[in-house]
Length: 54
Length: 378
Image (cartoon, rainbow over all chains, first blue to last red; front, side, top):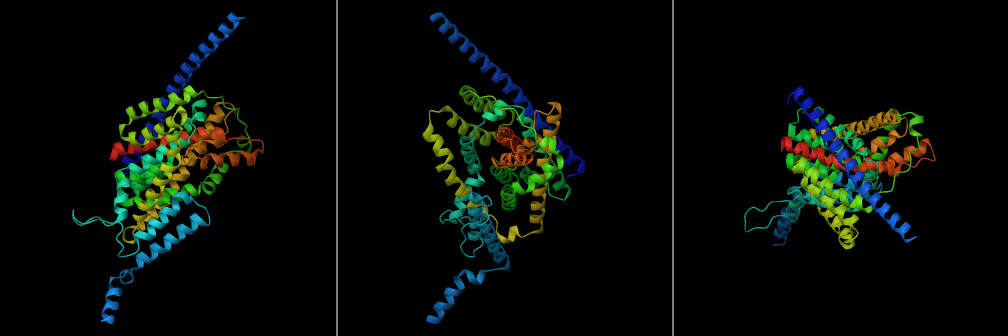
């Protein structure tokens, strides 16, 4: 394999690994945000309940 | 009559078939066994590998011999080796690794994924150097994956791309993983300042069980959609983790991380060791593979540490760059090295949980890199 081709392949591997993990990073951020919102709502509901019960 | 019987016994014994290559390999197996037992270098795998190597190099035993025809049996290790050949054992080990791993630090600090990606730099560097040394693309990819510092992944990819190099690559990968506490610290110290190494990081946020349960499912769907070829590794890694985090199948989780894992480690170690036969192992290219493996490990450490430095700069000193080197997989050894180096610089520094994020990200990163290489050259 010529050097230029192997350099490109090496670079390609690094870039694709980064791209896949950056996409995962973004999706984890979204997903944890959604879970936090759902969890936050639940906490708000329970807080409202407890206030309601006085 | 007695003389004839004695002569026949001697002729059919292994002694007559001993060669210098088998002698060297038996000695090498004994050295590896010594390192595993006396020096405790990755003993769980190095000891079975050493004994497999010993068994395969005892002439006339033919433990790895393929059956000559359908009516005759092959050697016992030949059948066990099918689990390696078909990529079953590495995936089952990933099941156990998933069941043993807490992805909480990664979920709490998803930016760790970037460090896990940067620490795959050694794969690319070793690939480039290997091709320039005359290895073909498949062989270079298999050598490069040593830089992922992940034994099962290295075995999985090498079996698919360059099975004739399996023994030296497995031995190099596991030997260097055992040597991480010696390889990484000088590079980490060279690339960071005392001030950077002393940085104390804020405690990670608690991660809910819902997040931990959804995480493996989400990662499986996404990674396998991106790279279908890596489904056996990532799929079983995440299944193991789901067994652990679901909290409803403790027996399965326990089996995956203990009994099953131990059984597979024995089969994998012995059969991988048994592929190291003198005639194929004792070649100049083996030394090249061992040198390139070290290069791959060093560059992976450099990649992770340098990105750690960059993240330290961008966050105005909130991230200790030492956690970057943990992006090479080798769970949890690489994270422990970050912890030790952090405490050496500042005794009040506790980096272990912070380093576990990049560490488990490295497992995902090296599996992704292996999937890309398999897709390119498989």
